[in-house]
Length: 334
Ligand code: NAD
Image 1 (cartoon, protein in one colour):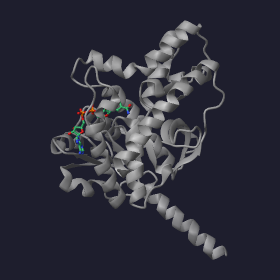
Image 2 (tube, protein in one colour):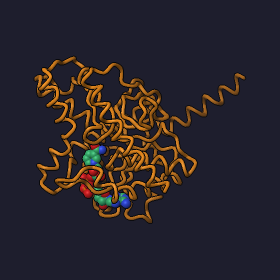
Image 3 (cartoon, protein in one colour):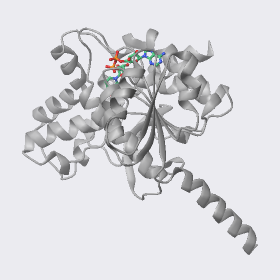
């Protein structure tokens, strides 16, 4: 008995040694508006030891450029579908910002036709090459691309709902920034949970649960909530046809990827809001604060008590979310 548990302990230790402080991260879509600054931020982090940059164009240049930084991670570029599986081999974390962004007048759902097949094909390769990786999806519409990747992994017999994440961190980052600005607080000290999904009415900032706690008159609360929900469109309009949020998204994506790595490394109390498979509401996928651990989701923390205003937002979000989820699942299954 003693020997057995010692063997198990030493095995789990040697398993964790291979991932502890030794994180291998792939970025799929690494040459894009998000992919490049995201890869820069990951290359800058001492938590990353290997950075695998995959795209269908321009990765040799991006990889050569980043590889000259005097930081720890080794960097390699992989270009085109023939190199995809090599890019994914042995990866602990895969972050996916591949796909087209919005132009003015478009909703995230308008991107479905192009991005659905991109995410499906990347998920097929993940299922084959690195099914145990923690996978973070940035490609829109996140409400549908997470169900798409999940269905692909399920069909391949390697689905673990604790390992697939829709990266909705930018909604939290925006909520923190806007509330801090409105109350003249240090944004680094503000934390607003954002639940639901990642588009329009499905984005539900829980300002009633803000830390530190803040109060607003009803009209101001409504305006702030709508600004958080439509913040992506604010950037799309300002960029006037040249794309959507890239720099703030890279910041948010790096924060989420590094949280996954910290959790892999056994750091306690790593919590992020993220869009995941969920039993919290009647929507099959739903963003809530989640405690992360070495195997992905350790515990879904749910969303606590909502104000009457937030309960109204939730009611509006659920039918839209269910529709987006069904559309993703149908894409893989029909
Ligand atoms: P971009 O066009 O600048 O970059 C996309 C990259 O994906 C390009 O380099 C392209 O070559 C690459 N690509 C295309 N097909 C590919 C494939 N099959 N395999 C690998 N790479 C492929 O776009 P962007 O501004 O970086 O945005 C990327 C995605 O992120 C969009 O879908 C956008 O809507 C989404 N986004 C999500 C959030 C979020 O909060 N989750 C925020 C902003 C943008």
